[in-house]
Length: 75
Image (cartoon, rainbow, N blue to C red):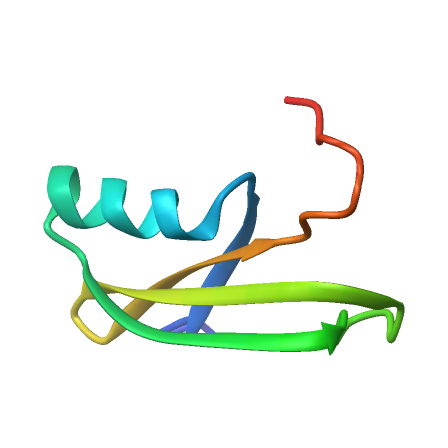
């Protein structure tokens, strides 16, 4: 079976607001939605969490999540 479409791909970012602004300005991606929670959905760990979604064209979505209390991530 060939995958026809992926709803979204998510990457961790350092600053969700700054990330949305950059992708809007430089790649013309529209902001779609932001979800803020007190627990990380994938682990259930108590942590403020921000998940933002950007329209990438052709019904594809690029998403980023911010975990501000966690150590910085490596490259």
